Image (cartoon, rainbow, N blue to C red; front, side, top):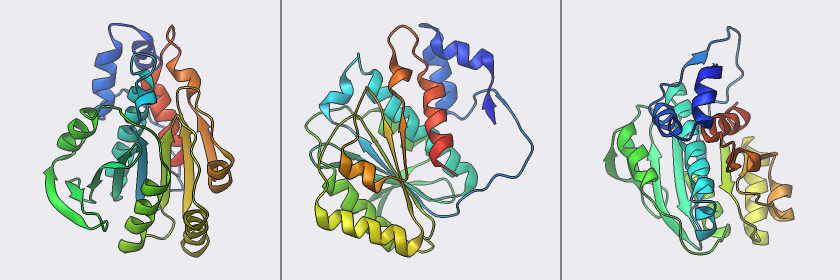
Length: 238
Protein backbone atom coordinates (compact mmCIF):
# COMPACT_ATOMS: atom_id res chain seq x y z
CA UNK A 1 0.00 0.00 0.00
CA UNK A 2 1.01 3.61 -0.56
CA UNK A 3 -0.06 6.72 1.35
CA UNK A 4 -2.40 8.97 -0.65
CA UNK A 5 -1.28 12.48 -1.74
CA UNK A 6 -3.85 14.02 0.63
CA UNK A 7 -2.32 12.28 3.62
CA UNK A 8 1.19 13.24 2.48
CA UNK A 9 0.10 16.89 2.24
CA UNK A 10 -1.24 16.69 5.80
CA UNK A 11 2.19 15.55 6.98
CA UNK A 12 3.72 18.77 5.60
CA UNK A 13 1.08 21.06 7.13
CA UNK A 14 2.11 22.65 10.47
CA UNK A 15 -1.41 22.24 11.95
CA UNK A 16 -2.63 19.02 10.33
CA UNK A 17 0.65 17.15 10.84
CA UNK A 18 -0.25 16.11 14.39
CA UNK A 19 -3.59 14.70 13.28
CA UNK A 20 -1.86 12.77 10.51
CA UNK A 21 0.63 11.36 13.01
CA UNK A 22 -2.27 10.13 15.16
CA UNK A 23 -3.68 8.42 12.06
CA UNK A 24 -0.29 6.79 11.54
CA UNK A 25 -0.12 5.53 15.12
CA UNK A 26 -3.68 4.17 14.86
CA UNK A 27 -2.92 2.54 11.49
CA UNK A 28 -5.61 4.71 9.86
CA UNK A 29 -3.66 6.54 7.16
CA UNK A 30 -5.57 6.52 3.87
CA UNK A 31 -3.65 4.40 1.39
CA UNK A 32 -3.81 3.07 -2.14
CA UNK A 33 -3.87 -0.74 -2.21
CA UNK A 34 -1.82 -2.53 -4.85
CA UNK A 35 -2.65 -6.14 -5.68
CA UNK A 36 0.26 -8.54 -5.97
CA UNK A 37 2.46 -10.94 -4.08
CA UNK A 38 4.66 -9.48 -1.35
CA UNK A 39 7.74 -11.42 -0.23
CA UNK A 40 7.57 -11.27 3.55
CA UNK A 41 9.94 -12.68 6.10
CA UNK A 42 8.23 -14.69 8.83
CA UNK A 43 10.86 -14.15 11.51
CA UNK A 44 10.88 -11.84 14.49
CA UNK A 45 11.78 -8.16 14.48
CA UNK A 46 13.89 -6.29 17.02
CA UNK A 47 14.00 -2.46 16.85
CA UNK A 48 16.88 -0.71 18.61
CA UNK A 49 15.60 2.83 19.18
CA UNK A 50 18.17 5.52 19.97
CA UNK A 51 16.92 7.64 22.90
CA UNK A 52 20.10 9.66 23.46
CA UNK A 53 19.99 13.43 24.09
CA UNK A 54 21.00 14.33 20.52
CA UNK A 55 17.68 12.90 19.32
CA UNK A 56 15.99 15.93 20.90
CA UNK A 57 17.63 18.23 18.33
CA UNK A 58 15.49 20.21 15.92
CA UNK A 59 12.71 20.67 18.48
CA UNK A 60 12.52 16.91 18.85
CA UNK A 61 11.95 16.19 15.15
CA UNK A 62 14.66 13.51 15.08
CA UNK A 63 13.11 11.68 18.02
CA UNK A 64 9.62 12.01 16.54
CA UNK A 65 10.81 10.55 13.24
CA UNK A 66 12.62 7.71 15.03
CA UNK A 67 9.59 6.89 17.17
CA UNK A 68 7.28 7.11 14.13
CA UNK A 69 9.56 4.68 12.29
CA UNK A 70 9.38 2.25 15.20
CA UNK A 71 5.59 2.52 15.40
CA UNK A 72 5.14 2.15 11.65
CA UNK A 73 7.21 -1.04 11.90
CA UNK A 74 5.13 -2.26 14.84
CA UNK A 75 1.96 -1.68 12.82
CA UNK A 76 3.35 -3.78 9.98
CA UNK A 77 4.41 -6.56 12.36
CA UNK A 78 0.99 -6.55 14.04
CA UNK A 79 -0.63 -6.90 10.62
CA UNK A 80 1.65 -9.84 9.73
CA UNK A 81 1.46 -11.54 13.12
CA UNK A 82 5.19 -11.18 13.77
CA UNK A 83 6.76 -10.76 17.20
CA UNK A 84 8.35 -7.30 17.44
CA UNK A 85 10.55 -6.11 20.30
CA UNK A 86 11.57 -2.48 20.90
CA UNK A 87 14.70 -1.68 22.90
CA UNK A 88 15.15 1.96 23.84
CA UNK A 89 18.77 2.87 24.51
CA UNK A 90 21.23 5.71 25.10
CA UNK A 91 24.42 5.03 27.06
CA UNK A 92 22.70 1.84 28.21
CA UNK A 93 19.35 0.12 27.83
CA UNK A 94 16.44 2.30 28.96
CA UNK A 95 13.50 -0.01 28.33
CA UNK A 96 12.65 -3.36 26.70
CA UNK A 97 9.14 -4.12 25.42
CA UNK A 98 7.59 -6.62 23.03
CA UNK A 99 4.48 -7.02 20.89
CA UNK A 100 3.43 -10.67 20.61
CA UNK A 101 1.73 -12.39 17.67
CA UNK A 102 -1.71 -11.69 19.17
CA UNK A 103 -1.09 -7.95 19.43
CA UNK A 104 -0.51 -7.90 23.19
CA UNK A 105 2.36 -5.92 24.72
CA UNK A 106 4.84 -7.07 27.36
CA UNK A 107 7.90 -5.83 29.20
CA UNK A 108 11.05 -7.91 28.77
CA UNK A 109 13.40 -9.18 31.45
CA UNK A 110 17.18 -8.81 31.28
CA UNK A 111 17.43 -12.28 29.69
CA UNK A 112 15.00 -11.39 26.90
CA UNK A 113 12.10 -13.41 28.32
CA UNK A 114 8.71 -11.79 28.83
CA UNK A 115 8.01 -10.05 32.11
CA UNK A 116 4.85 -8.16 33.01
CA UNK A 117 1.96 -7.59 30.64
CA UNK A 118 1.99 -3.99 29.42
CA UNK A 119 -1.44 -4.06 27.78
CA UNK A 120 -2.74 -3.53 24.26
CA UNK A 121 -1.05 -2.23 21.13
CA UNK A 122 -2.23 1.29 22.02
CA UNK A 123 -0.68 0.96 25.47
CA UNK A 124 2.62 0.00 23.85
CA UNK A 125 2.49 3.01 21.51
CA UNK A 126 1.76 5.36 24.43
CA UNK A 127 4.61 3.84 26.44
CA UNK A 128 7.14 4.45 23.65
CA UNK A 129 5.85 7.94 22.81
CA UNK A 130 6.17 9.11 26.43
CA UNK A 131 9.89 8.31 26.67
CA UNK A 132 12.21 11.34 26.50
CA UNK A 133 15.71 11.42 24.94
CA UNK A 134 18.67 11.78 27.34
CA UNK A 135 22.27 10.70 27.85
CA UNK A 136 24.97 9.44 25.49
CA UNK A 137 25.08 6.68 22.87
CA UNK A 138 26.37 3.11 23.20
CA UNK A 139 25.47 0.45 20.61
CA UNK A 140 26.96 -2.55 22.43
CA UNK A 141 24.37 -3.16 25.16
CA UNK A 142 21.32 -2.97 22.84
CA UNK A 143 23.00 -5.12 20.17
CA UNK A 144 23.89 -7.78 22.73
CA UNK A 145 20.36 -7.73 24.11
CA UNK A 146 18.92 -8.02 20.58
CA UNK A 147 21.01 -11.16 20.08
CA UNK A 148 19.78 -12.54 23.41
CA UNK A 149 16.18 -11.98 22.27
CA UNK A 150 16.74 -13.70 18.95
CA UNK A 151 18.51 -16.68 20.51
CA UNK A 152 15.70 -17.03 23.06
CA UNK A 153 12.79 -17.00 20.58
CA UNK A 154 11.57 -19.99 18.63
CA UNK A 155 11.36 -19.57 14.88
CA UNK A 156 13.91 -16.77 14.77
CA UNK A 157 15.17 -17.70 11.31
CA UNK A 158 15.08 -14.87 8.75
CA UNK A 159 14.56 -12.31 11.50
CA UNK A 160 15.16 -8.57 11.15
CA UNK A 161 17.22 -6.30 13.40
CA UNK A 162 16.61 -2.58 12.91
CA UNK A 163 18.85 0.13 14.40
CA UNK A 164 17.22 3.61 14.39
CA UNK A 165 19.80 6.25 15.35
CA UNK A 166 21.38 9.61 14.61
CA UNK A 167 24.70 8.87 16.23
CA UNK A 168 28.09 7.27 15.81
CA UNK A 169 29.44 4.68 18.21
CA UNK A 170 31.85 1.76 18.07
CA UNK A 171 30.77 -1.87 18.21
CA UNK A 172 32.89 -4.30 20.25
CA UNK A 173 34.65 -6.91 18.12
CA UNK A 174 33.06 -9.85 19.94
CA UNK A 175 29.54 -8.47 19.52
CA UNK A 176 30.21 -7.80 15.84
CA UNK A 177 31.39 -11.40 15.40
CA UNK A 178 28.35 -12.77 17.26
CA UNK A 179 26.02 -10.63 15.17
CA UNK A 180 27.60 -11.80 11.94
CA UNK A 181 27.38 -15.41 13.11
CA UNK A 182 23.65 -14.96 13.85
CA UNK A 183 23.13 -13.55 10.35
CA UNK A 184 25.07 -16.41 8.74
CA UNK A 185 23.53 -19.21 10.79
CA UNK A 186 19.90 -18.06 10.90
CA UNK A 187 19.61 -15.90 7.80
CA UNK A 188 18.99 -12.77 9.84
CA UNK A 189 19.21 -9.24 8.44
CA UNK A 190 20.28 -5.95 9.99
CA UNK A 191 19.14 -2.53 8.83
CA UNK A 192 20.18 0.91 10.04
CA UNK A 193 17.83 3.90 9.77
CA UNK A 194 19.60 7.26 10.10
CA UNK A 195 17.79 10.42 11.25
CA UNK A 196 18.90 13.99 11.94
CA UNK A 197 21.86 13.89 9.52
CA UNK A 198 23.39 11.03 11.48
CA UNK A 199 26.38 9.21 10.06
CA UNK A 200 26.83 5.49 10.27
CA UNK A 201 30.31 4.45 11.39
CA UNK A 202 32.19 1.71 9.59
CA UNK A 203 31.24 -0.81 12.29
CA UNK A 204 27.51 -0.36 11.71
CA UNK A 205 27.88 -0.02 7.93
CA UNK A 206 29.78 -3.30 7.72
CA UNK A 207 27.16 -5.10 9.81
CA UNK A 208 24.14 -3.59 8.05
CA UNK A 209 22.54 -5.15 5.00
CA UNK A 210 21.07 -1.75 4.19
CA UNK A 211 21.34 1.82 5.52
CA UNK A 212 18.25 4.00 5.08
CA UNK A 213 18.92 7.74 5.42
CA UNK A 214 15.86 9.77 6.45
CA UNK A 215 17.74 12.99 7.22
CA UNK A 216 15.84 15.01 4.62
CA UNK A 217 12.52 14.03 6.18
CA UNK A 218 13.09 16.33 9.17
CA UNK A 219 13.77 19.52 7.20
CA UNK A 220 12.17 22.25 9.30
CA UNK A 221 10.33 23.82 6.38
CA UNK A 222 9.01 20.66 4.71
CA UNK A 223 8.69 18.05 7.40
CA UNK A 224 7.25 14.81 6.13
CA UNK A 225 7.75 12.68 9.18
CA UNK A 226 4.92 10.22 8.73
CA UNK A 227 5.78 9.35 5.15
CA UNK A 228 9.44 9.12 6.14
CA UNK A 229 8.54 6.57 8.80
CA UNK A 230 6.50 4.57 6.32
CA UNK A 231 9.41 4.77 3.85
CA UNK A 232 11.77 3.34 6.45
CA UNK A 233 9.38 0.58 7.50
CA UNK A 234 8.67 -0.43 3.91
CA UNK A 235 12.39 -0.56 3.14
CA UNK A 236 13.33 -2.84 6.02
CA UNK A 237 10.27 -5.04 6.58
CA UNK A 238 10.24 -7.44 3.64
